Length: 294
Image (cartoon, rainbow, N blue to C red):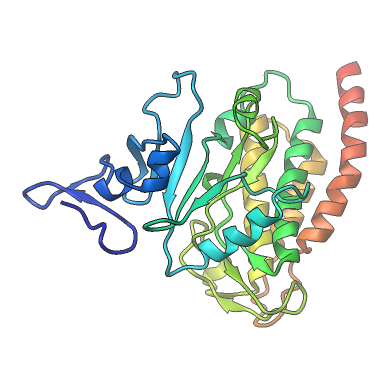
């Protein structure tokens, strides 16, 4: 038994009505385009919504993620817009396919979580971290240029490609950071600096000062600041000295919230943040060279 006659989540239940959170619904297994593509979902990654094609990352073949799109949100039209311009260098959407038959599902390559990635190098040069920061700021700026706000930017909604995955999947770039999960995202009539505040949806980050009304683009930048602070701590360790330039930048993005009810001026725009990071891209190698010589 399953709840697949409605929109996601498509839960599978046993004869006693208990949900099997790891099971794949029969409707998804029978999805005609998945069958034609020889893609078989085998396990739940987010029960009822997101599924993986392989059970083990040790398998040498390419792994894919299959997401049942919720048609009560704007995720489908947003992905349609983003995928039409997938070759733009500023677009940090994972190259994916939307399969429309039966019920729309998104199929994209499985890429790595960022937490293990940013903490793997023994040496801690600043340049790779600045490059990662730039990737994410560029991706947010691109969304905002289309008047799209992600609204749930966090470490769980960002992935990074390994050299192995780049070799397996067309269009994937090694060491590039990508933004995923547009289930909470929204499109707006006005762009940054003009759009008034909205009531925030449920998000993984807690709004500062208990606020529920936020400029959507400024909220994305606030969440970007929290995300980059997390990456900074993962990269250098919470108890180690962090380069002042990275500490200043994350603090600048997080800003000092004043509870703006219209257009927010508590932090920079994503465009300004990306431009500053472009300058940091020149400074970081110099700082790394100076650090290695001492």
